[in-house]
Amino acid sequence: MNCQLIAFTGLLSLASVAAESLAVEQFESIEETKGMDITQFIDVLSTRVVHTSGMEFDGPTRGDADFTSAGVFALLGLNEFAPDWFWVPAFRYEYSDLDINAAPFGANPAAPALDNDLHRLSLQSFIINTPEDSKWMHGAYLMAGVNSDFAGVSSRDIDVAAAIGSGYRFTDRFMLGFGVFGSNLLNDPFIIPAAVFFWMPTDDWLVSYYGPRFVARREFGDNIRFGFEAGWNGGWWGIDAFGSRSRLDVNSLRTGLYYRQRIAGEAWFEVGAGYTFLNEIQILSPGGRENFPGVLGETDPAPYVSVGFSLRRW
Image 1 (cartoon, rainbow, N blue to C red):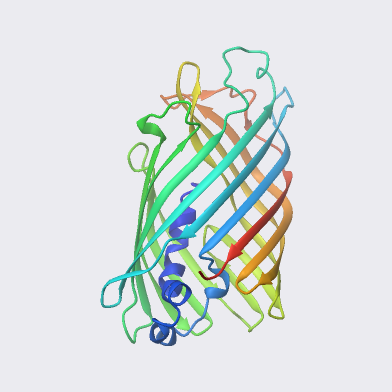
Image 2: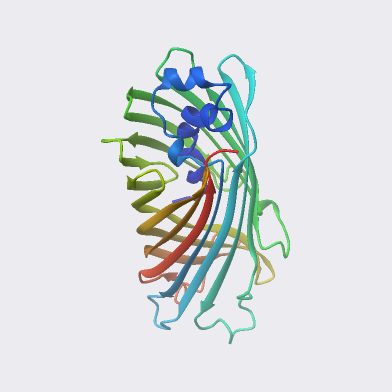
């Protein structure tokens, strides 16, 4: 699973909420024609720190690893360049740290440093079409970014992704969308179909999939939300290793509970905890060969904790 699915599966949801969440008064008519208000879980600004500890490798060394990420995502504005057509630019930055405690690390001078600062920086653009008096919405997405330790940057550190899709609001409580997503288009293209849906069985309950992130949550009044989430956790980066630019991959499935509390106005605080599954850590050579296959690789499930802040509207 690729990290940039996060950008695509949010595309169709943004198509239905960008007008209301970024320029509420100007686009009230669009919200009325679309009917379903899902701005309650689409944030124009979000920050989150996730720490996973004690991921024990399945190899004979029985080493382990800790992984921490801290990121920020922000929508930068809303620009109508033609009737019912909008351009929404966005920015994402994430800092990560991977601490590996396993042989031959620490004993083999050829092994890469364990204290690499890992960065992911990208600029993103959403093109959104919301036809008047229609339940359809359409969107396209383009992202250009760099995933690197910045000890040195090569073309293989550059990530370019694109997507196109459409969504349809069947009722005021259910929306379904489909599209095609492609990632790492300059190096090793990864292209798959993808989907997104939002379902509100009652005013207090929401079940959704986008991000790629599955959420089932309940509101307790206007200021408290409690729910279950399952989503992808990790990333890939270009790092200096063995005299060349190698690729570090971290992949896992994060599942757990979270609690959100309104601080003031549209500002929210969030805490969460749970377990990660299907964990895997790899270092790949420029030719795609796996380094240290007997040491790195799959790990056992491990606990995680998270804390975050979000803003629904500017």
